[in-house]
Image (spheres, rainbow, N blue to C red):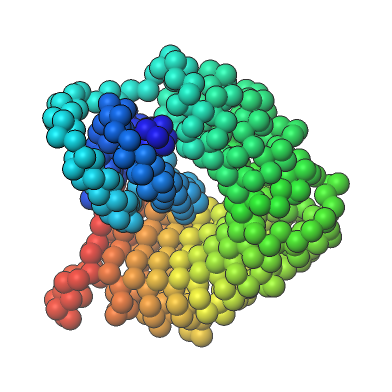
Length: 474
């Protein structure tokens, strides 16, 4: 029965390891540490005790451990998908209190059984906890490894033979290890629900053997070619690549992927559009698309009524960088990220028609200019209103002038301007937006900084508004 606790202990030790840098913690870190301490103490007590009544606790402890693992795994998956570009993720544990209380009740039950258990617990608490999980220790405990349901590697190297021990593992995260060839042993882990890895050779033939896989995250330097068999995986919910993913020309629709919620970053080709690919992902929530082909081909996403987070990316030296003008959006969009694209005035007006758009990132884009104009500018016309926009982020733009009124962004709360070295100033009327809370400036010219500080000064002196924060980083 003690082995039921070992999987949870291993997960907690790996997350709390002092040398891992992928996860940071909020104020709930003591809760994780407390849960780890209780689980270790309880396991040691169980191993030392032979009381027959302890058998009655087996079901309670097993259910509690599985509940804790499900909460932790769900939080990890949520954070990784919500913050795909972040090297450090925040681990929040708001729902572990009940699990900790259930382990406490098991401890109380054990203490009531025999008086010597309390002394054993005190001895355990004085023991030094070993936090490092070395490869030789892993290999020395095949029985414990075979019962693990989650394996998170924070190191840079591990023998591929370790994977063959993880027969029941459901979550496998080895993103920190860069493999030249995909470890074939992983394809034997048929219980996997979550797989995150880094491999220069990409996805292997036979990936569809992982029939129950729900989340697949692949980090690769070069373009990732998605084998056609990946679309046979009916349980797949999240498919994410750190680079561009290309779906082969031979792709054929076999069934509608009703469970698929995330695809990032897929290369949109004319053949893919003709195949009706977007028709078979009706429940997609987060989509990243890359397009460099002819701008005359329409990309219609208007039927994806659950799509909330969309990233559009191209290359400015390709004709396809103008494809946004032919892109049809669903009204459900809440967050839109645009990278390396040409922005036409009528396209920006189209964005104003999105009633739920709350977050807009514009990065390395070029704004349409008149034939006689020598400098880029973004003039938000009087009738254009981003009615729900709360966060606007402008990065690495070459615009010189930005003209806008407070009525263009009536609900804006945060404005971030990052590395826009040509920009002369922030429109002064932006300060009159009643909901504005923060202006963040990073590596911009002195005139931009001066305009932000002037906006803050006017708000304080003329309107007694000291809630507006101006943050400047050089």
